Length: 237
Image (cartoon, rainbow, N blue to C red; front, side):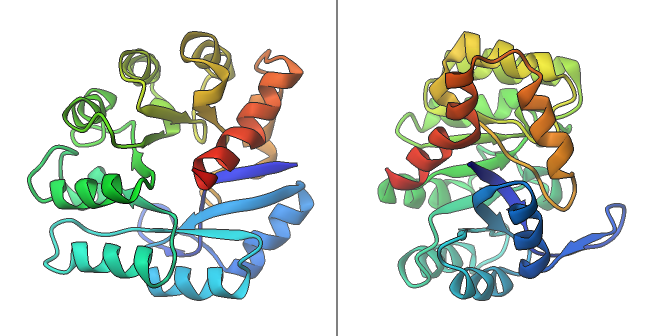
């Protein structure tokens, strides 16, 4: 079985032009033997309803815009009332650096609750691995998931692995990474317990994202860690 550490519900217009309902996500999960998925979306209320309808399959992460006055309140409500299990940050979309002052209260709250902070990576100027490394250094007790592990740019993928090797409070997530061989490299350099599978559905297809893990050269035990065990532990701790 598989646990997906990165999926979405909702509509994403503009350049992306993709959307997914909870039902569509679950159908894809069933098709590819995905046991659970971490989900987030720009409409946090939609995520709440989706998770509440399928609590055995979907795990909610709250997605705030740190520039908004109510961002910390939203995070508190989602974690303490809705029982969401983590925070998603998108520096590129909302135009902030991970170490900006607006972000600090959210990171401090998540750290106090011992919940993971998933951060988009791979696009300048706001979402580069080095900036996420600075956040990890400033908050050594924070549990940070670098989504996409640098994404489709070889230099950023290398930077993601280098940064995670430097800071042991960073985990790497695989969705959208352009080089399957870098998944193997990441496991070899930072350990099989710190790399986890994500699909980025509906932006990416499960068949493609799973195949990259399966052909990367990982041993069977390492594949199980990446595809299932590491995400399970992240959500349990």
